[in-house]
Image 1 (cartoon, protein in one colour):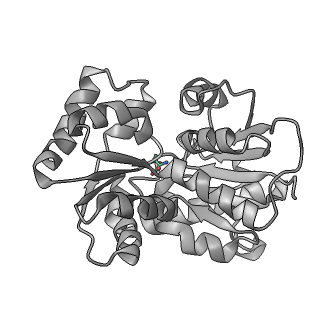
Image 2: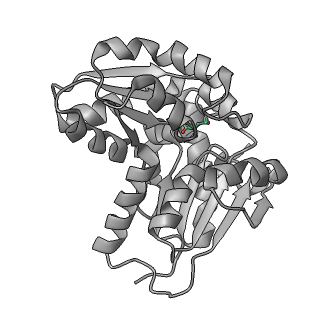
Image 3: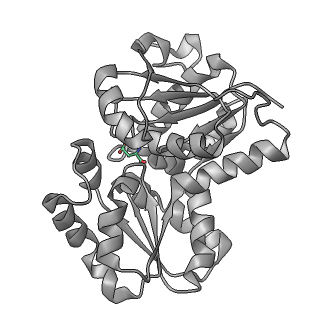
Amino acid sequence: MSDSPIAVFDSGLGGLSVVRHLRQLLPREDIVYFGDTARVPYGTKSQPTVVQFALETAGFLLQFDPKLIVAACNTASALALDELMQAMPVPVIGVVEPGARAAVPLAGGAPIAVLGTEATIASGSYLRAIRAVQPTQPVISKACPLFVPLVEEGRNSGDPLVRMTVETYLGGLRSQGVRVVVLGCTHYPLLREAIAELLGPDVQIVDSGRETSLVVQQHLAARAALSGRRTPGTLRCYVSDNPARFQRVGSWFLNESIEHVEFVEPERYVNLARQPSERP
Ligand code: DGL
């Protein structure tokens, strides 16, 4: 048993959609979360930048002595997981592989559509993770960059702008025999209803965040590292900018109110990944 916290990081508040599942599935675990709200979005940035930001953001969380780090951000998982696994002294679980693994058996050989940010789709990480399970699996990859700002603006599945955008990005999938859609971005579960409605009842939707929470549970159970406490786990959030907005918008992602949010000054995470002698 281990009462050390689970550390979760994301480019901003989207990772709370993953924390939501972790808290449902593992209600006795303490969670520390760092949202890099000063530098969001990661989804339009290059790999070297995402790697640097991910190492700094995850590195900040090490001070809490976590038993595990979850890279809740799909973009960071897609572009920086190897570097994170090498650099962190504790196991790191990303969201790409759990989502990919869940999708393959559901597809039964029909095409899987993967939706994500520009950077996630350009990285080909989901495609590789799916093909690692089933080498002949047809995959349609689709970047949906407008989904993130729409969700951050508080627009939901009923909003006409959302419906129009979903139709624009995904309308073409209807004629391609897609059986499974992977929501490969922290924000897309909040548009799930609009996506499901457009694609119809024969298409199954995989939420990578939910699948990741199941993998975290299995990982901790297999190592006898689940929390042994009987009281509910706590959630402490840290952000690199605008805690008030994080608290307000984030509670929609989390589906509960956020009690503890602290602002983190750049000196506490920027350049953390570099040796002191390398810092400017
Ligand atoms: N968290 C990011 C992801 O899941 C979406 C927001 C961003 O672009 O940083 O890819």
